[in-house]
Length: 138
Image (cartoon, rainbow, N blue to C red; front, side):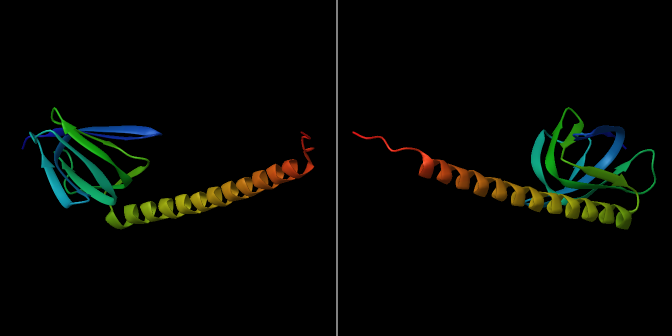
């Protein structure tokens, strides 16, 4: 079987596999597959699991990702995402993704709370400055 390259990128790591024979992912239109020699292709991946097969491994390698952008050009598929996990065990990788998403959601809620508190404090101080500033007399 013919193979293509798969490059996975997130802010902390880059993984490259040059022996991928098939890739299955999902975007807003549903599931799709890529084989070597595919036309030029660009799509936005959904949060969840994708999978690929390689020449060297028997079975499937699962890719959990927090959404991302997939481009296929020159027989290379490149995925850019915020986070990804690779594992041969589907259940283990799904748990890793779920845990990471829960941590990110908690961090996001905390950041929103801090931003609201900061905004409230800034408005209060601006209101106090407006009250204590002397009025101009014409």
